[in-house]
Image 1: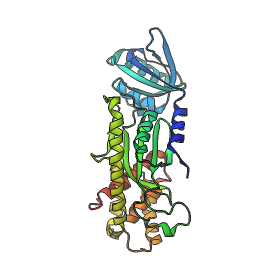
Image 2: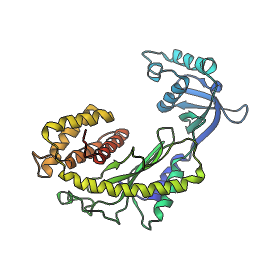
Image 3: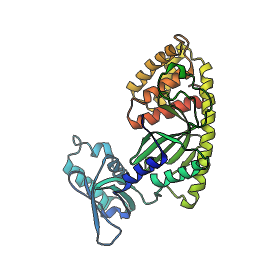
Image 4: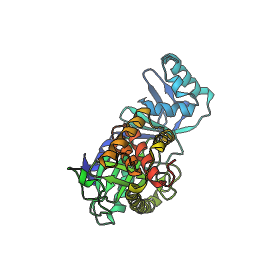
Length: 345
């Protein structure tokens, strides 16, 4: 498990952004598509054109702007490349209303084609404001499981404060067995993949797994990349950090209490199926989750007495074996199960 600091995370973000370039007010009529995913478009400077290779994410956005199904036109079995190029060029040149776009590139790769209503609130700016907010606490957080790219995700953990002992500390011989600490989960997208967020979390150092608490709750800090004033961001982020820390404490209390919430064997399968379907969890992950629940119950000395604690822990363990996007999804699911533990369905 890699543990780092805000400063080092900020350095990673700056390094990633070093070759990123943005172009505003790109007219739809200026888009010109070529072979091997090439796209040429007008720059803001009159008479100057830019060119790049669009990735899969940007291609999906292009197709959305042109109102053409990406899965069909992007599948060579359905639509050979020459036909794809012809369709894209004709739609952009003639058949769609002319609009302006915001194009984001990293090096020669077109990483996003966004609406001109998109407001920049990039990873570096967001992280700086979060850092300023947590600095008022007078303690330095530890950064766990950070991911930096077009999407940024990380857990911020404050080991100096302990909410409660970790219920499973005695069963682990390595890692942090000092207890359950305040934690935040921060995330942001620079390509239109979601809002900037600070969310309450429970992060367990003994096994490097976490759950994200209250992702959809109204009190969670969330700023969508549209029509926000940057002058207000510092205040909003500070409020968001404060709310997230309160939710972290609430989540920890519910996490401990979940040890007493029994899950009857007859309901276990339907609970797993219902939550997996609700969140779009893959069949493989769902099956692994079901198996891990039984393992958790045995480890905790409750072979035939499964508790919600076991169900949630099993989900967070399985999440670490999945690709990044599904990891976040499963950890959000675990947090939502905890949030609404009175109604598991």
